Length: 391
Image 1: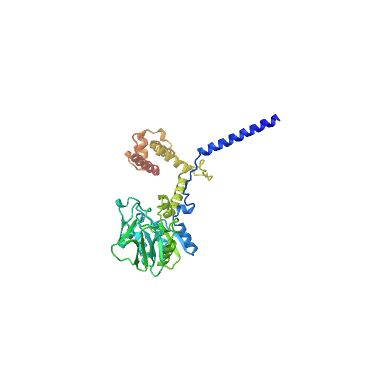
Image 2: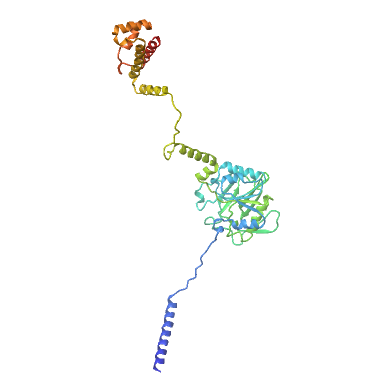
C-alpha cells in the first residue's frame, strides 16, 4: 500500500511541474504573424512577360524573343507585332531606322518610354522613337513618388477603345505622361487630361508609344482589363499570328562574335599552324637515308678530293700535283731528263713545246701557300695544261 501511495505522489508532482512549466512558457512566448512575399518562380522570375506570352500561345500565336541587333535586323517579316521595352541606346541608330521601315511596310510596333528610374529630372532623355514621333516625356504633376509606385487606382484607368462601346479599366502607370508636340497622333489614352498612350499611323503600320508596359507584366496582366487591352494592341495592327518581345539587349562577347563571323578563317589558321608545327618540329630520331649501292667512277673521287683541297685553301698542293703530272710525262718522253742540268732541261722543253723560257720556268719555281692566289692558280694551271698538250 505504501508503494502505491508513493507512486501516486510522484506522478502528481510530475504532472503539476509540467502544468506550471507549460503555463510559464506560454506566458513568455509571443506569437507574431508576418507576411512574406515569396515572389515568382522559374521562368516567370527572369521573363517579365511570360504570362502574356502564354496567353498568346494559347491563342495559336508564334512568340519570339529578340536579344540583339542581329536578330532584330534579320528575323523580321513584313508583318506581326513587336513589344519593344529595351533601352534605346543599346541599339544602333541604323538598326532602329530599319525597324521603322518595317513598320511602314505593315508592322505593328508598341514601345514604352525608356525606364529612367527615380532620377528622371537629371537624365538625358534621348529616345529615338520619341524624337521621330515628336513626343516629349514629363513627370505627371498630379502624382507624387517615383516610377512604379504611382500606378492607377485599383479599379484602373478607364477609357474607350475605338469602335468599341464598352469602357476598359487598365492598370497603367501614370508617373510619366506624354506630350504630342507635333499633334499628329491618330489616337490617345488619357488620364485627367494627360496622355499615357499615343498612337501614330506610319505607312501601312502603327507605332504606339505608351508610358509603361508594366500592365502586361506577370504580376499585373491578370488585373482589371489589362489582358483585354494587351490583346487589342496585338490584333490592332496586323492579322499575322506572330509577336516579338524585345525587353533586353544581350551584347555578345568578343569571342562569340569572332567565332560567329570568322569561323572559316580561324579553322584555316589552325590548320596552317598545325602544318607549320609538323614541318618545323623535331623528328623522333634521325632521318633514314637511302644508301647508294651503285659503283662510282674514280674520277668522282679525284674531283671530290680536288674540291676538298680547294675549299680548304690547299691550292698549292693541287698545283704541285699538276707539275708532277707534267714532269712525269716529260720523263717518259725524255729518258735522260734526270741527268740534265736545269738549263739543258729548259732547252729541250723549248724545242719540244715551242714555248718561251718565261712560260717554262713555272716547272722549276716552287710554290708557297702565301704566294698562290686564285687568279695565279688558274693562270699557272692553264700554262701547265699547254705544256702537257705540247709534249
